Length: 336
Image 1 (cartoon, rainbow, N blue to C red):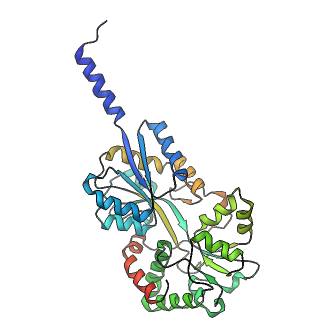
Image 2 (cartoon, rainbow, N blue to C red):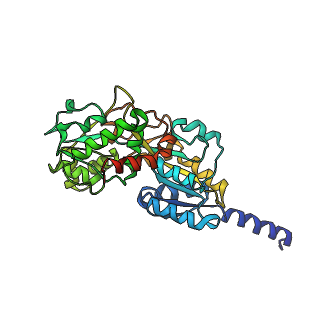
Image 3 (tube, one colour):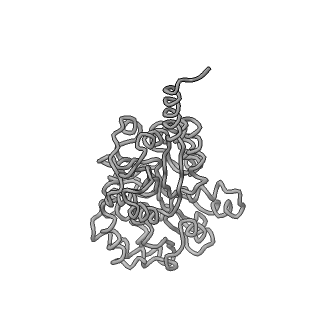
Protein backbone atom coordinates (compact mmCIF):
# COMPACT_ATOMS: atom_id res chain seq x y z
CA UNK A 1 0.00 0.00 0.00
CA UNK A 2 1.32 3.39 -0.93
CA UNK A 3 1.59 5.92 1.88
CA UNK A 4 0.27 9.38 0.94
CA UNK A 5 3.03 11.91 0.40
CA UNK A 6 1.46 14.19 3.03
CA UNK A 7 1.85 11.47 5.68
CA UNK A 8 5.46 10.89 4.67
CA UNK A 9 6.12 14.58 5.24
CA UNK A 10 4.52 14.38 8.69
CA UNK A 11 6.64 11.35 9.60
CA UNK A 12 9.80 13.17 8.50
CA UNK A 13 8.91 16.20 10.59
CA UNK A 14 8.14 14.08 13.63
CA UNK A 15 11.39 12.14 13.27
CA UNK A 16 13.36 15.35 12.88
CA UNK A 17 11.78 16.77 16.02
CA UNK A 18 12.68 13.67 18.02
CA UNK A 19 16.19 13.33 16.64
CA UNK A 20 16.97 17.02 17.23
CA UNK A 21 16.23 16.75 20.96
CA UNK A 22 19.58 17.42 22.57
CA UNK A 23 21.45 19.34 25.24
CA UNK A 24 25.00 20.65 24.86
CA UNK A 25 26.76 20.73 28.23
CA UNK A 26 30.01 22.45 29.13
CA UNK A 27 31.31 21.05 32.39
CA UNK A 28 34.37 21.27 34.61
CA UNK A 29 33.48 17.94 36.20
CA UNK A 30 35.67 15.05 35.11
CA UNK A 31 33.91 12.95 32.50
CA UNK A 32 33.77 9.85 34.72
CA UNK A 33 32.00 11.87 37.42
CA UNK A 34 29.15 13.09 35.23
CA UNK A 35 28.92 11.22 31.90
CA UNK A 36 27.16 8.10 33.26
CA UNK A 37 24.41 10.30 34.69
CA UNK A 38 24.01 12.14 31.39
CA UNK A 39 23.86 8.84 29.51
CA UNK A 40 21.14 7.63 31.88
CA UNK A 41 19.22 10.84 31.20
CA UNK A 42 19.39 10.07 27.48
CA UNK A 43 18.18 6.51 28.11
CA UNK A 44 15.27 7.75 30.22
CA UNK A 45 14.21 10.68 28.04
CA UNK A 46 15.54 10.14 24.54
CA UNK A 47 17.27 13.54 24.69
CA UNK A 48 20.87 13.33 23.50
CA UNK A 49 23.55 15.03 25.58
CA UNK A 50 26.80 16.29 24.09
CA UNK A 51 29.43 16.90 26.76
CA UNK A 52 32.48 19.13 26.60
CA UNK A 53 34.74 19.06 29.66
CA UNK A 54 37.52 21.45 30.62
CA UNK A 55 38.93 23.63 33.37
CA UNK A 56 36.46 26.05 34.94
CA UNK A 57 38.10 29.32 33.95
CA UNK A 58 38.98 28.03 30.49
CA UNK A 59 35.32 27.17 29.90
CA UNK A 60 34.25 30.66 30.93
CA UNK A 61 36.77 32.20 28.53
CA UNK A 62 35.54 29.93 25.74
CA UNK A 63 31.91 30.81 26.40
CA UNK A 64 32.79 34.49 26.36
CA UNK A 65 34.61 34.20 23.03
CA UNK A 66 31.83 32.13 21.46
CA UNK A 67 29.20 34.65 22.51
CA UNK A 68 25.82 34.23 20.84
CA UNK A 69 27.27 31.56 18.57
CA UNK A 70 28.08 29.25 21.47
CA UNK A 71 26.55 25.78 21.16
CA UNK A 72 26.44 25.45 24.96
CA UNK A 73 23.02 25.11 26.58
CA UNK A 74 24.19 24.45 30.15
CA UNK A 75 27.28 25.15 32.22
CA UNK A 76 27.98 22.78 35.11
CA UNK A 77 30.79 24.08 37.27
CA UNK A 78 32.09 24.28 40.84
CA UNK A 79 32.00 27.04 43.43
CA UNK A 80 29.54 29.90 43.57
CA UNK A 81 32.24 32.41 42.62
CA UNK A 82 32.49 30.87 39.15
CA UNK A 83 28.72 30.75 38.74
CA UNK A 84 28.54 34.41 39.76
CA UNK A 85 31.32 35.19 37.30
CA UNK A 86 29.39 33.52 34.48
CA UNK A 87 26.35 35.58 35.38
CA UNK A 88 28.31 38.84 35.63
CA UNK A 89 29.81 38.11 32.19
CA UNK A 90 26.22 37.97 30.91
CA UNK A 91 26.64 34.37 29.80
CA UNK A 92 23.61 33.04 31.67
CA UNK A 93 19.87 33.55 31.70
CA UNK A 94 17.16 33.32 34.36
CA UNK A 95 15.25 30.06 34.56
CA UNK A 96 11.70 29.95 35.88
CA UNK A 97 10.90 26.53 37.33
CA UNK A 98 8.50 25.69 40.13
CA UNK A 99 10.19 22.30 40.43
CA UNK A 100 13.64 23.80 41.00
CA UNK A 101 12.22 26.28 43.50
CA UNK A 102 10.56 23.43 45.38
CA UNK A 103 13.47 20.98 45.43
CA UNK A 104 16.44 23.30 45.96
CA UNK A 105 16.50 25.46 49.12
CA UNK A 106 16.62 29.20 48.47
CA UNK A 107 20.09 29.42 50.01
CA UNK A 108 21.42 27.15 47.26
CA UNK A 109 20.21 29.13 44.24
CA UNK A 110 20.69 32.55 42.71
CA UNK A 111 18.26 35.20 43.88
CA UNK A 112 17.53 35.99 40.21
CA UNK A 113 17.39 32.32 39.19
CA UNK A 114 20.50 32.35 36.99
CA UNK A 115 22.11 29.34 38.69
CA UNK A 116 21.06 26.42 40.87
CA UNK A 117 23.08 24.14 43.13
CA UNK A 118 23.49 20.46 42.27
CA UNK A 119 25.63 19.40 45.24
CA UNK A 120 27.12 21.13 48.27
CA UNK A 121 30.76 20.92 49.34
CA UNK A 122 32.16 21.45 52.83
CA UNK A 123 35.57 22.96 53.64
CA UNK A 124 36.39 22.15 57.28
CA UNK A 125 39.68 21.96 59.18
CA UNK A 126 41.50 18.66 58.62
CA UNK A 127 44.25 17.63 61.01
CA UNK A 128 46.57 14.83 62.15
CA UNK A 129 44.95 13.33 65.29
CA UNK A 130 48.25 11.72 66.31
CA UNK A 131 49.80 15.17 66.75
CA UNK A 132 46.86 17.50 67.34
CA UNK A 133 44.27 17.67 70.09
CA UNK A 134 41.09 18.99 68.44
CA UNK A 135 40.44 21.03 71.59
CA UNK A 136 43.28 23.25 70.38
CA UNK A 137 40.94 24.95 67.95
CA UNK A 138 37.31 25.91 67.80
CA UNK A 139 36.94 28.28 64.83
CA UNK A 140 38.56 28.96 61.47
CA UNK A 141 39.95 32.09 63.08
CA UNK A 142 42.01 29.95 65.51
CA UNK A 143 44.33 28.95 62.67
CA UNK A 144 45.95 32.38 63.05
CA UNK A 145 47.07 31.52 66.61
CA UNK A 146 50.82 31.33 67.15
CA UNK A 147 50.45 27.75 68.41
CA UNK A 148 50.19 26.75 64.74
CA UNK A 149 53.39 28.50 63.68
CA UNK A 150 55.18 26.24 61.18
CA UNK A 151 52.34 23.70 61.37
CA UNK A 152 49.82 24.91 58.75
CA UNK A 153 49.59 23.93 55.07
CA UNK A 154 47.38 25.84 52.60
CA UNK A 155 46.68 26.01 48.91
CA UNK A 156 47.56 29.21 47.10
CA UNK A 157 45.37 32.29 47.26
CA UNK A 158 44.32 31.85 43.62
CA UNK A 159 42.26 28.81 44.63
CA UNK A 160 38.58 29.73 44.42
CA UNK A 161 37.66 27.43 47.32
CA UNK A 162 39.88 29.44 49.65
CA UNK A 163 38.58 32.68 48.19
CA UNK A 164 34.98 31.80 48.98
CA UNK A 165 35.89 30.69 52.50
CA UNK A 166 37.61 34.03 53.07
CA UNK A 167 34.54 35.81 51.67
CA UNK A 168 32.39 34.12 54.33
CA UNK A 169 34.82 35.29 57.03
CA UNK A 170 34.81 38.80 55.59
CA UNK A 171 31.03 38.96 55.88
CA UNK A 172 31.12 37.65 59.46
CA UNK A 173 34.09 39.60 60.81
CA UNK A 174 34.70 42.65 58.66
CA UNK A 175 37.80 43.68 56.76
CA UNK A 176 40.20 44.48 59.63
CA UNK A 177 39.67 41.22 61.50
CA UNK A 178 39.74 39.17 58.32
CA UNK A 179 43.01 40.75 57.23
CA UNK A 180 44.55 40.00 60.65
CA UNK A 181 43.35 36.38 60.37
CA UNK A 182 44.87 36.00 56.92
CA UNK A 183 48.17 37.51 58.03
CA UNK A 184 48.24 35.17 61.01
CA UNK A 185 47.72 32.10 58.84
CA UNK A 186 50.40 33.22 56.40
CA UNK A 187 52.82 33.58 59.35
CA UNK A 188 51.97 30.02 60.44
CA UNK A 189 52.68 28.32 57.12
CA UNK A 190 54.98 25.32 57.25
CA UNK A 191 55.87 25.83 53.58
CA UNK A 192 54.90 28.15 50.72
CA UNK A 193 51.41 27.37 49.35
CA UNK A 194 51.64 24.67 46.70
CA UNK A 195 49.50 21.95 45.17
CA UNK A 196 45.83 21.10 45.43
CA UNK A 197 43.68 19.91 48.30
CA UNK A 198 44.92 16.32 48.00
CA UNK A 199 48.50 17.56 48.25
CA UNK A 200 47.65 19.36 51.50
CA UNK A 201 46.13 16.17 52.93
CA UNK A 202 49.18 14.14 51.97
CA UNK A 203 51.46 16.75 53.52
CA UNK A 204 49.60 16.53 56.83
CA UNK A 205 49.68 12.73 56.77
CA UNK A 206 53.42 12.81 56.03
CA UNK A 207 54.13 15.15 58.94
CA UNK A 208 55.14 18.15 56.84
CA UNK A 209 52.42 20.06 58.68
CA UNK A 210 49.74 19.24 61.22
CA UNK A 211 46.63 21.02 59.98
CA UNK A 212 45.07 22.26 56.75
CA UNK A 213 41.85 23.35 55.07
CA UNK A 214 40.36 21.04 52.45
CA UNK A 215 37.04 20.04 50.93
CA UNK A 216 35.74 16.83 52.45
CA UNK A 217 35.30 15.07 49.12
CA UNK A 218 39.08 15.00 48.66
CA UNK A 219 39.43 13.07 51.90
CA UNK A 220 36.50 10.83 50.93
CA UNK A 221 38.19 10.01 47.62
CA UNK A 222 41.29 8.85 49.48
CA UNK A 223 39.17 6.78 51.83
CA UNK A 224 37.30 5.09 48.97
CA UNK A 225 40.33 4.71 46.69
CA UNK A 226 41.50 1.30 45.46
CA UNK A 227 45.05 2.45 46.23
CA UNK A 228 46.27 1.32 49.66
CA UNK A 229 48.58 4.32 49.84
CA UNK A 230 45.59 6.65 49.54
CA UNK A 231 43.77 4.68 52.22
CA UNK A 232 46.75 5.04 54.53
CA UNK A 233 46.81 8.82 54.02
CA UNK A 234 43.11 9.03 54.88
CA UNK A 235 43.62 6.92 58.01
CA UNK A 236 46.09 9.51 59.35
CA UNK A 237 43.58 12.37 59.14
CA UNK A 238 40.48 13.60 60.95
CA UNK A 239 37.82 16.23 60.28
CA UNK A 240 37.06 19.12 62.63
CA UNK A 241 33.95 21.21 62.04
CA UNK A 242 34.76 24.81 62.99
CA UNK A 243 32.50 27.65 64.12
CA UNK A 244 29.77 25.34 65.36
CA UNK A 245 28.92 27.77 68.17
CA UNK A 246 28.51 30.76 65.85
CA UNK A 247 28.17 31.03 62.06
CA UNK A 248 28.81 27.38 61.14
CA UNK A 249 31.25 25.60 58.84
CA UNK A 250 31.79 26.84 55.30
CA UNK A 251 29.83 25.06 52.56
CA UNK A 252 29.94 25.87 48.87
CA UNK A 253 28.32 24.24 45.84
CA UNK A 254 28.65 22.75 42.43
CA UNK A 255 25.91 24.12 40.23
CA UNK A 256 24.28 24.54 36.86
CA UNK A 257 23.33 27.57 34.80
CA UNK A 258 21.48 27.89 31.50
CA UNK A 259 23.41 29.82 28.91
CA UNK A 260 21.99 32.99 27.41
CA UNK A 261 22.84 31.55 23.98
CA UNK A 262 21.10 28.22 24.64
CA UNK A 263 19.66 26.74 21.44
CA UNK A 264 17.74 23.96 23.26
CA UNK A 265 16.30 25.63 26.37
CA UNK A 266 13.42 23.18 26.87
CA UNK A 267 15.69 20.14 26.66
CA UNK A 268 18.22 21.90 28.90
CA UNK A 269 15.52 22.54 31.50
CA UNK A 270 14.55 18.87 31.32
CA UNK A 271 18.14 17.94 32.20
CA UNK A 272 18.19 20.45 35.07
CA UNK A 273 15.01 18.87 36.43
CA UNK A 274 16.49 15.38 36.01
CA UNK A 275 19.64 16.29 37.93
CA UNK A 276 17.68 17.30 41.02
CA UNK A 277 15.54 14.15 41.02
CA UNK A 278 16.09 11.84 43.99
CA UNK A 279 17.70 9.16 41.81
CA UNK A 280 20.12 11.55 40.14
CA UNK A 281 20.93 13.42 43.34
CA UNK A 282 21.79 10.19 45.14
CA UNK A 283 24.04 8.97 42.31
CA UNK A 284 25.68 12.35 41.75
CA UNK A 285 26.42 12.87 45.43
CA UNK A 286 27.78 9.36 45.95
CA UNK A 287 30.02 9.36 42.88
CA UNK A 288 31.37 12.85 43.57
CA UNK A 289 31.54 12.33 47.37
CA UNK A 290 29.53 15.51 47.89
CA UNK A 291 26.37 16.45 49.75
CA UNK A 292 23.04 16.36 47.88
CA UNK A 293 21.11 19.62 47.81
CA UNK A 294 17.66 18.18 47.13
CA UNK A 295 15.81 17.96 50.40
CA UNK A 296 15.21 14.45 51.69
CA UNK A 297 18.08 12.73 49.82
CA UNK A 298 20.48 10.78 52.06
CA UNK A 299 24.05 11.96 52.59
CA UNK A 300 26.64 9.44 51.31
CA UNK A 301 27.91 7.16 54.08
CA UNK A 302 31.52 8.29 53.69
CA UNK A 303 30.47 11.87 54.47
CA UNK A 304 27.99 10.92 57.17
CA UNK A 305 30.92 9.34 59.04
CA UNK A 306 32.43 12.84 59.43
CA UNK A 307 29.45 13.98 61.48
CA UNK A 308 26.51 16.32 60.97
CA UNK A 309 27.80 19.88 61.05
CA UNK A 310 26.01 23.19 61.35
CA UNK A 311 26.55 24.94 58.01
CA UNK A 312 27.16 28.65 57.54
CA UNK A 313 23.89 30.20 56.35
CA UNK A 314 25.64 33.09 54.62
CA UNK A 315 24.26 34.14 51.24
CA UNK A 316 26.15 32.28 48.52
CA UNK A 317 25.28 35.12 46.17
CA UNK A 318 27.17 37.49 48.45
CA UNK A 319 30.23 35.21 48.39
CA UNK A 320 30.33 35.51 44.63
CA UNK A 321 29.90 39.27 44.71
CA UNK A 322 32.83 39.67 47.14
CA UNK A 323 35.26 37.54 45.17
CA UNK A 324 37.37 40.35 43.75
CA UNK A 325 37.50 42.17 47.10
CA UNK A 326 38.70 38.96 48.73
CA UNK A 327 41.45 38.43 46.15
CA UNK A 328 42.81 41.90 46.91
CA UNK A 329 42.62 41.28 50.66
CA UNK A 330 44.47 37.95 50.39
CA UNK A 331 47.16 39.64 48.32
CA UNK A 332 47.45 42.39 50.94
CA UNK A 333 47.97 39.72 53.61
CA UNK A 334 50.82 38.19 51.64
CA UNK A 335 49.01 34.95 50.86
CA UNK A 336 50.54 33.88 47.58
